[in-house]
Length: 366
Image (cartoon, rainbow, N blue to C red; front, side):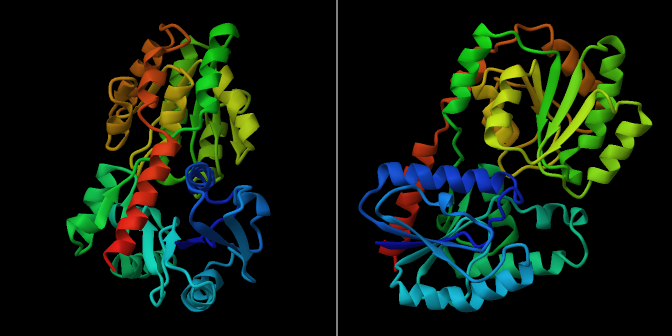
């Protein structure tokens, strides 16, 4: 087959976990598939390193910028279908929510979550209509929709008139490097450090985490909190709370960081906490478990589905419960043996195999 990959949405360092997803999945596809040809359509910001160094993968650069969302969406709806004709594509795989309505190739589209339906209050008013329209189009024109969790699959079936067989659940994987970090943690001293890897958006519940950490630090003044991830819509409010509580020397906001620096944080952290109120998957929880970090996360789906009993959970709105979990976790050994075992249930190889199967199934039903 000739498979297109619509990576026009990708802004390196600007789209959070969906970038990790795409890079990891493409590498895994290259490792298992040498037969099909892949044409990876990228914008001006994206480097050649997005495509794996394999003979059957090719970068096709487009004269549009990802940061200009209206221009990118227009290009996707007009020029990308012409590229599909020119490249004689059988399938267009869309890993970033949106698909071309008039694509001559079969569309297979990933919906990472349906936050615009579940929590429209977290969107800017001028963004929300575009999200609603473009994702509605994608749901209608895609032969197969991919959800990363059962919770997201249920949302797709709830909010769109879809036949159940059109929606498949394909969980994300976890980078093998995190399991190696777990081995390193057994030999190195960890630091009094809480780690939260998250974009600073309202639904991530970071403001509440900072307030709880302030209470935690009253009994444990040696501890620091690192918030590693993109600076999102709530960054200003989180920084204000940090200042109000006198935590500027003990709470660090990193912004988007390179993977090597992120690995160092996972290796050094004494505990990992993820207080989100809504998720489509929750990849950082899986990474923390793989690294053997004592982990706590919100008692919401799909985080409970992913972590099982390997993580402590708490209601995300309950500050006392969050504080109690933090107190309990630091009493445990710094390396959690159950986390890596749970994380081994997920792999990028498995995600790639199931994605390729979904693509084959989509074309065979045409």
